[in-house]
Amino acid sequence: MNLFNVYPLFNINPVKALGSFLWDDQGQQYLDFYGGHAVISIGHNHPYYQNALKEQLGKISFYSNSVQNGLQNELAEKLGRISGYGDYGLFLCNSGAEANENALKLASFHNGKSKVLYFSGSFHGRTSAAVSVTDNPKIVAPVNYDERFIRSEWNNIGQLEEIFEKEGTEISSVIIEGIQGVGGVMIPDTAFLTRIKELCEQNDAVLILDEVQSGYGRSGHFFAHQEYGIQPDLITTAKGMGNGFPIGGVLIHPKFRATNGLLGTTFGGNHLACAAAIAVLDVMEDESLMENARIMGNYIEEEISMLPHIRSIRRKGLMIGIELDRDCAEVRSRLLYDHHIFTGNSNDKAVLRILPALNIKKEETDLFIGALKTVLEGLATEATKALTH
Image (tube, rainbow, N blue to C red; front, side):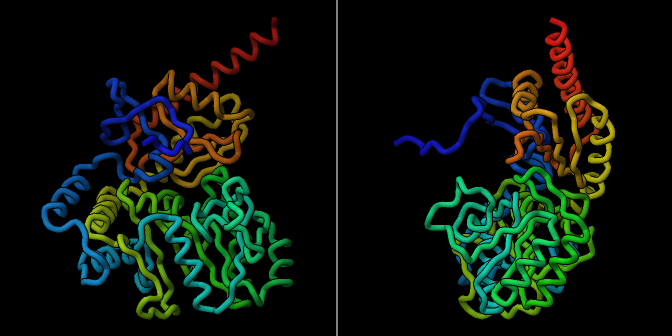
């Protein structure tokens, strides 16, 4: 049997990782400035995280949600306290897509309505309803398409109001990312988010904040939306939640009522997943990683802002989009193969996406800054030479 070939792969096979570094099967070291799509929040193989998982493996790794699991309660208490959402409920699942599926379903159960408003540039997952509110026709199969899912332009308050004027009584929920990741690190305007919240309240619609990539300290706040002073009805999270162990969750406003069988999952909130997620929160708190995200993000922006070929920098904390004056593919390639640094891209081909671990150190950021400087100045020199010939 062969793998079903759906991923464009770099010819690199990592076999070991520690902190912000990876090593391949040839012994080559790489600096990880992408964290597997913002998954690696506290660095690879953090010793506290490793020990927590090893210790849990020695006890019990899994049983279904038909029995008590004290680790789920510990995780919920800790997440509520650190995030500031202690009065919310927590439903645990396995991924960001699954979290969004359950949030959309819960919203519809709550108000009995079926239409969902989403935004241009969005990415909410690849499963049934989640892909239907993802702005990429290439990955929306005919079975997923439905006119109940309504697309509105990002940061366009006028269009938002027009849609609510026409469809408001039928809109079950509005789903929006705290910061768009795949869309190119697009940051919502304060007035835009505030107006969404107002329209949801006026029309009995549920506001879902997708913090799958932008949450867990990535923006310098626990959730990116907390900078704007709004309170969503549902918050979805995953990626950095388990530092590589699959786990996701929905934070649920107390106005939602739980009933037996309303939601469910086989693997969600299993013992190992909870041990991983608890360890992540412990490290984030003990090592002040949200503060580090703000400090290191500021430092990176300051150091690269005057480099050639950079058109703009969109950033909150360590969620960084570097918009170039060209397709970023060549820059990524040179960083990877000439300087051995992993970076990311986005649906906007000009945007280089930077998502290092939240405990990245200054000397590691300097390696990235120096490499990016060499690559961009090299491209500028090559362009100058080409013009003179």
